[in-house]
Image (cartoon, rainbow, N blue to C red):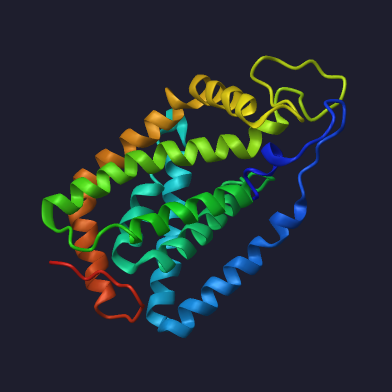
Length: 245
């Protein structure tokens, strides 16, 4: 609902459209519930230590890459960690790592809760991949997932900001053919959004992010998976995928 609510409301075109900040305020509650569930399921202090180390590592990688041209060294490690430690751990890591990186890079803003939530889904999705995949098939599946996740992340982040761009949220400002139009039919706004996404990010930032994810997973994925699994065997967390190596 944090992402799609503007498409569902019905208002007059001249009405001001403000986001319901209640959704953003509820995000810390979601994190607290997830941490409580993980603790109940067997999360020990060693896994918390791993969570802290990985969050810091992802924050540093984000600061080094800065997303220039879509090159982001953030998601490949998030995907690999979610694969090893499971979907719950991947969800929490997505939230904590993006929050930490925002503090380090002065990236705190209204976009941050959306980045945290969508990144959490990226980490969770990696943990939900079939566990029977091993060896080269596992690396290939993770690389393919990294490509898909890159485009989905870009699309959802666009959706979080698009309704408030191009002057649409301010009455009296000129709209374009790509602007969100309050009160318009859902399919019409989805068409506008699809064209907006294709023009602004799909062929540029999203593609750069997808290539970065795939290359990083193919090149360093096997070594990182081995290291993370070695750490996982020394810790306790529900849903750990030990795998070979």
